[in-house]
Amino acid sequence: MEILLDRSKKLIFVLLIGVFLLTTQNIKQTLAENYGGGNYGANLYGKDTPEPPPANAKACIDTAPASSPTVTSAVSNNGSEIDITISSAQDPVTYYALEYGTQSGIYPYSSTNIGDKSARRYTIRFLYPNTTYYLRIRAGNGCMTGEWSREIYVKTKSAIATNNLNFAKTTFESTTKIIPEQPSTGENPLITTERELYSLTVLVTNTLDNPVQGAQVTIDSEPQIGTTDEMGLVHFDNIEKGQHQLFVSFKKYSGEESIFIDGSARNIKLNIKIKTDNIMFSNTTIIVVSILCFIILLLLVFLFRYRKNHKQN
Image (cartoon, rainbow, N blue to C red):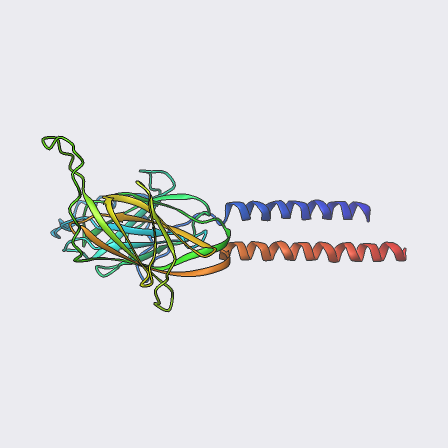
């Protein structure tokens, strides 16, 4: 009986170690799950272009998209997903493709169809928690593909987090606000440095579309901090073109997302809809914790029965 008990303890110990490793590593990373259609990569994972067509195949007569799309925002609301917002490419466009990875410039995971011409949002699923992902997209038209967008990066949240502020929805739009001329800096007027600067207005609302007053909004690069007014608005000037991290905190909650500012419109409005979570568990973590509790319960039952039998003997 002692030998059986010793072996059982070893088995349970091994199971506990396995569950712990699964918890820390999350689920094995797989391909992005498509947002309402597509072919999950069509066995072209990590490749920029399909395999060459057969020798007797007809030549492609489709026209390539006139421009590349842009990932205007990317946000991780939990430890295993990233939501991206897509700025459309110029026609002709019939679909969008995605590729991503955990190193800049290296994209071992992809999906060749993440939505048609009207696609504006996409969710990448089954990711590692607390990991930075680099991604880019491009448009396609039939058998022709366009240029890849600029790379954008975002870090997934930890598997378990408290006081989490989720970004339920993020949208960009251009505005007609006139940016005032900047005062002279006294520099030599013959020496000029051209920089593409933008005016950014952020609107923060809750899930009922009511404005959130008193939320602190921070944009990095050259950090600027502002607080939303009674209309839920905060304004930033002189924002440079490119990627920025946007941090929002409200009461004891906080969250962040990556945004990419680009385009000819110099006045941009960013609409953010937020929701609060006291404790957030990813689906994978819930499953793992449930398995762990079940194993502990079995261990307690086994020890109880062993002691009971031992006393009777």
